[in-house]
Length: 312
Length: 294
Image (cartoon, rainbow over all chains, first blue to last red; front, side, top):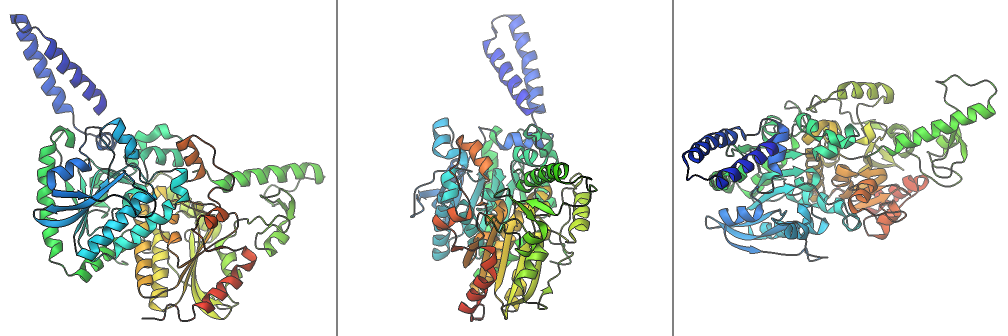
């Protein structure tokens, strides 16, 4: 649906460009086409969970490097897990957020095919998670807040990843993050699938962009496991409760950042501005809390998930 | 992930039907199980009673068949010491209202007598107190939804409160898809509870049994102070089929099996089921002051 509209918009834009507007007929044609174009653009809004999945995966959607450029200054990238290798699918380092030193960590998918390959399409191996752990330990040591950006199809299902302890690396991050005494804010910017997303997500405050998704696994994987038919992915999107609003209703996230009608990629500056404001106010609130209270708040928040309120 | 037990069951069924045709002159009623089963390891016919007495381990080839949580608990805990830690309610049920899920749960509860895929108890092992949680793969492949996450967490909290060592027998296909993101968050919840328990000096022994995969392997299964595994157990984040599809090549023999993990540094020791109780008792003795620091 969104894809079809996108193609029609692109085709129409091209037609308008090629019109000969030196004649009266051409000018009339142009104004008609521009009206059509405006209509198409107005129709380009997500109407289903599958539409949101499409937007969440849109190649033009802002990625971690865009967020770092827009929201932080003096970013210093820190590479490597100090055990095995550098994993480009996770980007991390120290930066200033309105003058406050923070540790920034997030999945990186890359913007071109070359970059996609270098970042393994945002699917980390254990080295990526261990680099993230190393940076989080430093944040704890230096009392820096941590801001994470979640954007991954999932942890990489590869031979080396398994041999080097993909499961163990994710588990260690979950355990360590739960006890951090610095403020942690996680933002699901695009696609957050499986333990590979959650390994950066045990935060005091979890935010989602309006068209981001957060799920136990990809809709394709879900359909393949439960219905033995990955082609039913669109149907899976509708039952998985993976949209920001679903997650908020389930009590699994703390806030939603609105996007422009056609998705974050149609007006990224507006998204950066809204996120900047939200991060400032959330961070301001968390920085007032004592270290032990930060760990306790985070623990209780996840402790209550899946437990009925009266029992939690 | 395809259910390996389902495949095995189909194979066994085929074999027992075949045997019924050749050996038995009058075919037995369909609902009466054959007194024999084929070993999933060597294919030899074993009597059910013999296999049961040997805790599901083939006396010929040593293949470890899955056993139920009640059988495992009874074999592990000293007689008359088990006190079940009940967790029958208090968890979010069916957050997606997923078609057929509630009926499936009800059916499995009737069939297994379990409330979900894990059973927890406090008791004694060779005279030493411990808290034990055992997962049961008969229940939706031991997958972790809110009920499993909550039961594991409460079991950790119980051990923490009573300063007792904790043992978890893991067996799981991973997060329970039918519960969506709620099941994903159980990974964080259980891991966080274990981190607190560990911080206060609690001893946690993880025993990885076949299969331990997905969200369970990437949370509490991999956070043990001591990690044991049963011979041949599949222990993985992503299952072998998914990996083969992703990388487009065949995986080596024994990949992601307990012995493979041992040689790659993720398991302290592979321990046969018959020796498990003695090894756990020894570990409890070696940590006699474990969990008592606070």
